[in-house]
Amino acid sequence: MRILIFLTARLHLRHLCGPKVTSGLVAECLDALSALASLNRVTLAWVPGHRAFLVMRKLTSLLDASAMPLLGPEPALGIPKCLLREAIKNWTEMQHLTG
Image (cartoon, rainbow, N blue to C red; front, side, top):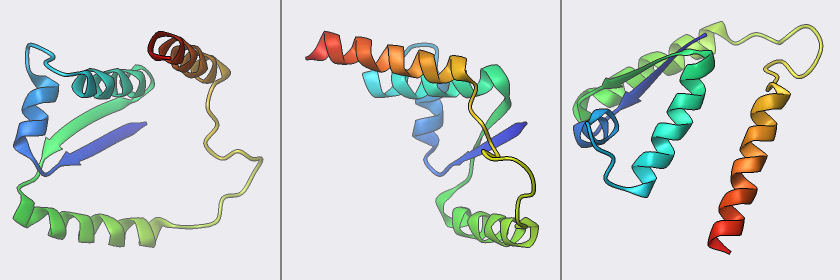
C-alpha cells in the first residue's frame, strides 16, 4: 500500500529527514514512520500552508467519491498480530522505564 503524508510545516519535514534526531518526539515519529514503511511505501511531502486547504479539499472529494461499503469479513484492515505484540511490548517497556 502507498501512504502519502502531507506536512504544512517545512521545519517538521527537516526534523524528520535530518541527519540527527534532536528530540524524543521526533524519535517517536520516526519510529512510527519506520513501522509504517516496513509494510508500505511511505512518502512525506511538504505543502505550503496556503495550498494545504486546496489539497485537503481535493483529497476529501476524492475520498468521498471512492467511499463504498466494504464487502467481506471483518476487520477490513486487519493488523498483523506481530505488530500488535510489538506495540504492546514497547508500551509496557516504556511504562516500566518511566513509571
